[in-house]
Image 1 (cartoon, rainbow, N blue to C red):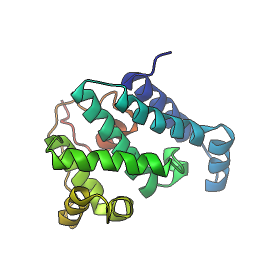
Image 2: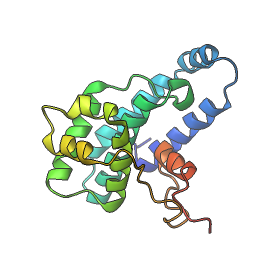
Image 3: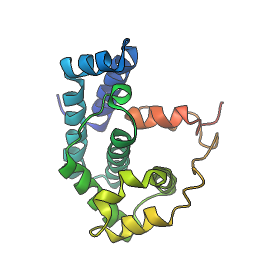
Image 4: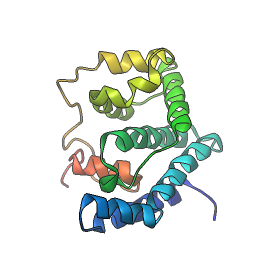
Length: 182
């Protein structure tokens, strides 16, 4: 089967549903996730997004893939693995995706949606700065300039369905109520 952004989104949804269905103690859930290969499958999805970025010519698709990579980088660090199904993503891919993001910031290739997403993630600067400081000046500057006293995401401003079929990133933002009710 050919890897597409939609197939990766579907795989993420399956892993999200499985992870959300687990019961028991934290240790029991982590054991189930490890035993069923969920962490490995999520690492493969993360790697596949990265590979797909380089095998895609469409600039809109590349931007969407980068949004998902950056989300997974952030989410895998700030949330517990028993909650996300994400554990120990490949640090070289995290660094490379942040390097690409740095280049996008330098060339003004990120859109308004990505700006507010990145502003939100920057409130947890410990999830980005260890990868960007001393190497990625535009990303470091962006993160350091964000007012972290305000979590900047657009409450009920986006059209309903904006976050559909966007992997765990879309699910997360729906829970944050960024879409209109109707």
